[in-house]
Length: 221
Image 1 (cartoon, rainbow, N blue to C red):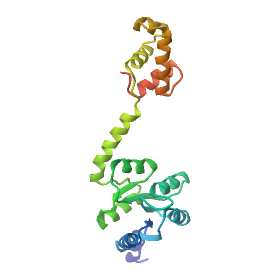
Image 2: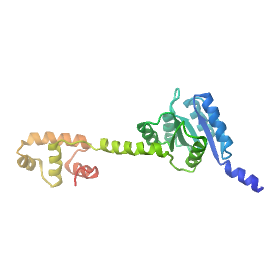
Image 3: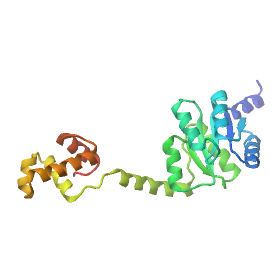
Image 4: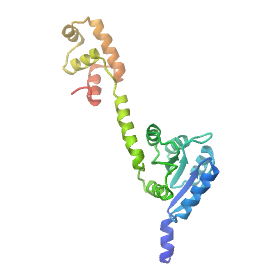
């Protein structure tokens, strides 16, 4: 094979399926990806369901998916790709750039998220990077994503009442419910009520597990 042939083969390694319900945008995107000389658009679909069928049939390296589509949206397709163990990596291309939406897409298993306002060169670069296994989020979305991660982390940690915190700290010191009742000047039944609420918030069923979970979630120093 000549050098030209080898270079052409190397550029065609990334096989792509484009899924978008807007024909004009889909055609323009597919044409732009092909014209890059690095990507081979092997299929196009106008709905999430049709796109998923193509992905299952063709097993492209990358699926470029619109977020909002009829029948199955982009996240539904991503979920199915991950659930079924398909080798295709997903890049969401959407007009929606809300940080919560981006976070959910990556949480579902998408390898990248771009605005539809992105330049063609940015989209081509993102597809190539996703094909290599990289996660792609442009800087203008990354800042919001970091804030979303911090928000989710705060929401994930349960909010304990003052009494529940005292019960947890007492358990960490090896105190029993009667010991805590005496220390806090409360009835044993009241301490048991706080204990039960503590267990429910932590998702545990005994003192040792409560202490371990409290330490894992940073509720105990």
